[in-house]
Image 1: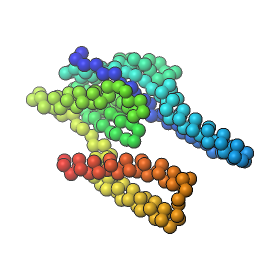
Image 2: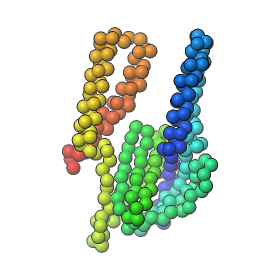
Image 3: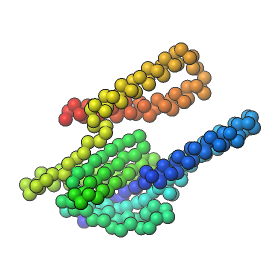
Image 4: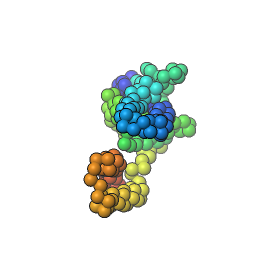
Length: 231
């Protein structure tokens, strides 16, 4: 084996199973505590902060996290699971040669980076990297992975090259449509601030929470459009 990379892998399904029920608990808690007046509001606020922090930053690291070592050489990749998900059996070592790969797709979202490998046999391998627990070798592995694929595709003996599937953020038509939708949302938000006279923090805070991710999406759209234009 030439190189070894330690990867922190998250299950999106387990992550959602932690996040969604935790946030849905806000409704019954509100119904229970709000009638108590100011004391109930204070308790609700404290519980809300605790629930959001625990469900997003703490609990997933115990229930949705796995660790694996990926060994890379000129022939392919080997996946060794160092730590499986909580409550699940240890996964067996999996060896995948470069010849077995049909295509791959790399996607980057607001919270996750995902590498999807499609095998000629019909099998798939997915690696999910969560930004809030990213102290691993994922970026280094991706650099090495792309070099390995590029080297394989350039070989004279390569009959069928390994394709790079386009992510949704590389689809020009999709980016333009989403850009128009976000533009409408921005205009509607500005008009709301002007005509409704929202000046207190209770009214502005939810708007900022919504606009934060939207600004990130706009940046991604601009980069995606620039990339598709170059291609």
